[in-house]
Length: 250
Image (cartoon, rainbow, N blue to C red; front, top):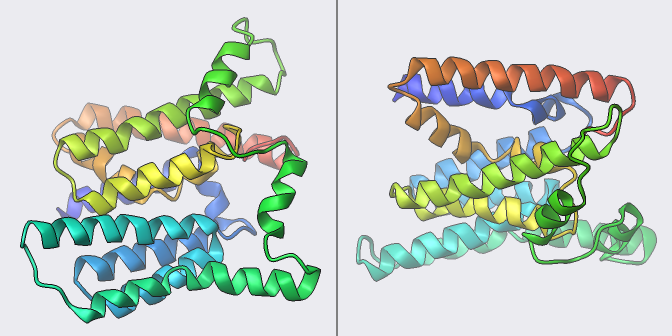
């Protein structure tokens, strides 16, 4: 188990979008908070899970996915009578507090609590069915891969979107706890519902249950581990080069 967790950490750090974890973005804080929230939820420490979840939703609106994932998992366990109801579970309702606090700050500063959503239109984003951006990208893509075309980056983002939609499905089939695969599925779907595949690699970098799953299925296949680390590392290098040369990287 220790080796599996170590490998999942290596995969996370080698992932192409991992350089955002050390950039001036909220990704690193979100990863820390979401991990802490899941850790305490797994131990049934609901107050701590809610507090960490609040910080996650303050760092990123996708932190709200934690509440949905925990709620489904908790109801499923109650339904199967694997645990008894407890009022402490209501502490999970702290999670949306981060988004609420951010909306209050926007209301005070710019007079619009939904500014973070409204101004996504400036990036060409709009609410849509999560699978539509993938389909549109692949249909409109120039399969000759013209040199220097920014659409090549969209193709890479679409591929990662497909992979990170398939991973939670595979996790569910293998019997992973619902809150783990629901977090990955919800995070990816929430990103894609903005109408574009752009930033998919960046947002996938914080879907840590997916890396735990990849470590699990490659545990007995050292060759697969090596190829996965090599592939991630090469793409990480390319993404870094794009980023430092002022090209779009997420």
